[in-house]
Amino acid sequence: MEVCGKEVRIDGKLIRIGFIDGEGYQFLEDPELALGALRKSGTRIDLFTFIQKLSDTSPKYNYPIEWDNMAALRVSTFDDWMTKQIDFKVRNKVRKATKNGVVVREVPFDDAYVRGIHAIYNESPIRQGKPFWHYGKDLEAVRKMNATFMDRSIFIGAYLESSLIGFVKLVFDEDRHQAGLMQIVSMMGHQDKAPTNALIAQAVRSCAERGISYLWYANMSYGKKQADGLADFKRHNGFQKIELPRYFVPLTLAGRVAFRLGIHHGVTDWIPEPVAATYRRLRKQWYARKLSGQADSDQKMAPGYSPQSGDPAEQPTIQPARREN
Image 1: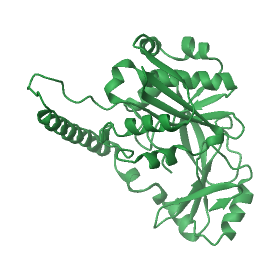
Image 2 (image 1 turned 45 degrees about the vertical axis):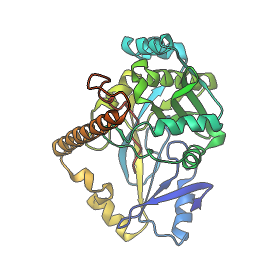
Image 3 (image 1 turned 60 degrees about the vertical axis):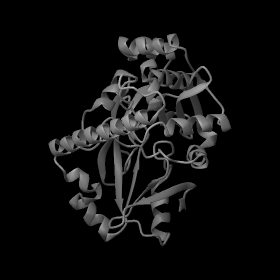
């Protein structure tokens, strides 16, 4: 459904939570007007949630709030980021990518680019120790899912010779004040060439050239999970945790009860972090063994196989977690 020119999505069955599609890339200019339209829509939404912009971190509205966060960096110039906002290891990796022949540039969203994204998605069924949800998508599905916000998107490609080995879809808000990494994925087989660092470097450069003040990369922390390898990766690349007010506006009695009892967060937030961390570790180990077994099986079926020819499958590279509401 559409409200105030923005598409509203609804998640959940027992408690239905509405939110702006593309949250972080677009915002409500008049929340009260939008809430009025939702109440009159006839569509059941128990809770409606929205956030403010990165430049506006103090609560502006008298609705119930919880604190959310984004991993964001303040953009001034590319040289400032390169010399002051990142550590020497990241600088070396950005330079390493160039020395290894990786060329990063803004590119058009054409058929060749879509085919390159399709190849990256289908490199492996497992990333970050769990099934990769883009794996197995056909070419048309890949095109459709990456063709959103076309008037506000910047596409970046990392190339090794003529092959796309990593890509970024960068989307900026209506005011060109902040831009988010909607997609950033690199091939695992080329992680030794540091394409992901090079892609972030170009994203910073693209923002600086357009006068975009903030670059954000999903959340810095998720629920009780406060630190992990992905958060460290973001921090090393200059991203910081910025807390923002997240508003939850009950539109029904069920919504008021759910918010008061805290059940709008879902089951995972009730699991103690040590238990969740153990589960994530075991899941990653299980999928790593599964992927290694598949690689060994494929290798043994290949002509000219010998036990000494080839190494185990590469470990998954860092990918951004999807933002959940």
